Image (cartoon, rainbow, N blue to C red):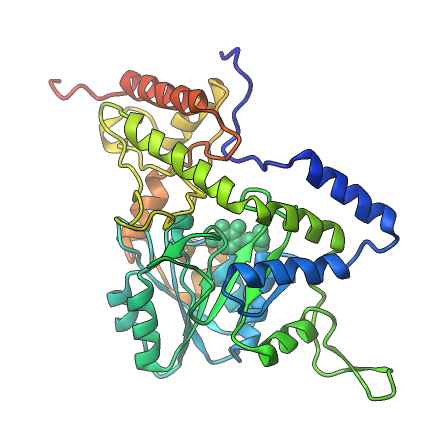
Length: 385
Ligand SMILES: *Cc1c(COP(=O)(O)O)cnc(C)c1O
């Protein structure tokens, strides 16, 4: 149906310098974790005010290690929003703890702190919030709540690298913070993730946990201090991440400009419910990994699946971020049901992620806006009938 090139909903921006740097690593004779990992960690640390950072093979691995660093295990409860990617509750369950799913605020789609407070009990050990789509949680309220109850915080900032709160980047303050470098995120290392920790002691713990639990004995031989997995990031990935990180401000500025264009031009009848535009006065507040409006399905004759197929037929890719985590089969044993967390469920049922990535043109945004308007106009339930 479309003569235009296919427009995916996400695409990494990799320049020739990055590609050449990868070739250099491949030729260097050292391709797994080494000097580029150290350099990537140093650059990440500099970007979060000098706090220690360790990189691993994914954000999912970083979330798991963060739970271990925080000492969370069987018998513990961790509060997490139900509008999140499955990685967060998966890792809570994997370390033997119990996820306590809480609803989100309908406007920010971030953890509803009042409802979180109401779910804190004697077994609660941590809060694991997601900064939805790149928009920070209410960091003042979050850390005040955690401090009041002596809880650890593990921020899932997978989509929010470079986002600021009161002018300070996420990860530069607070407790444990996780970034993702999956290709759909704001910077990529192909696959990869980072964990920002509080001190060198925690950083050491991450280093042991990411590589078999190995520590060195005084004679140079190896001991396993605690059973652990293997989550190290290769240098090939780290050098991609280094080049990407240098471009983060440019990438995020372009994402914000494209989002602004969506806000100005995305007009359909009936209207889409547009996402949160970012907090006033916080110029770099929102990293806009996602631009995900909600479809007015009750006023349309088509389903979300049909809407997505209609865009796909016009050469436009879309995504769903996210399904409601509390309703996933693997978490059924925790006893949640449809109707328990209505804001999360409404978002999960009606959300559609539209294309947004730094190499998109203004014309690409206009094309998506026109396609949405056309598909929705054709499916409108006539209010006069
Ligand atoms: C992508 C994502 C993750 C997982 O990141 P990986 O690096 O793929 O493990 C976790 N949480 C959120 C919110 C994400 O978007």
